[in-house]
Image 1 (spheres, rainbow, N blue to C red):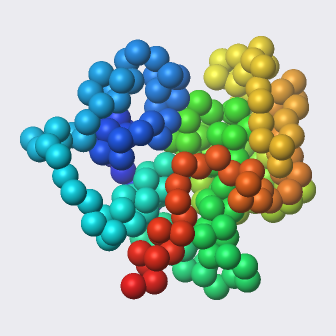
Image 2: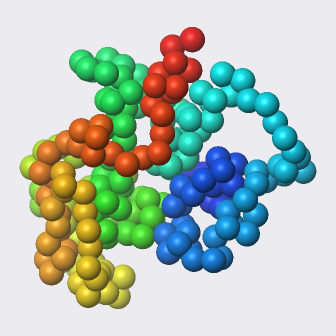
Image 3: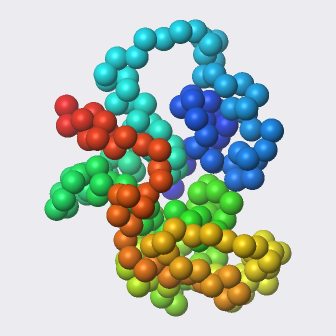
Length: 206
């Protein structure tokens, strides 16, 4: 599976805001954006005038990086969202939030989406009792996501039982059992992703 292998902090600096790609480090003074709040590269500190196309492109890049997708994966998700009934931009964000790696992150079982994707790839989770190791797997309302019994013994998951976890209201979590339930698909008002999705729709509609 193709994936981005470069610096995560470089992506945050390019977008000019925290995308929370490195878990706890993003909340500490070590965050690269705190130390160098300008775009990477030789001309990162220069003044740039952004066109309408540039604004649309930045929103697409931001959303893509926020959820950890490459261009082909993101475009395929957009095309599926466009074929669904309703508002394409809302459909896109709901589909991105419904990915298994994102749900694992939202449930507090990983400190970042990148870590969540790795944990899912390594087969640490089940959905409705069946092992699923595909990060892009789309969960449905009522789905039960749980840490495998064998994996619960690892220090990574043992320490989660000692944590206070807050989850979005479209999810519920049982920290002691290390499992969570998708109560419903989120509405747009329940998604806190800092993205203007209408700009993404405009970009792909050209």
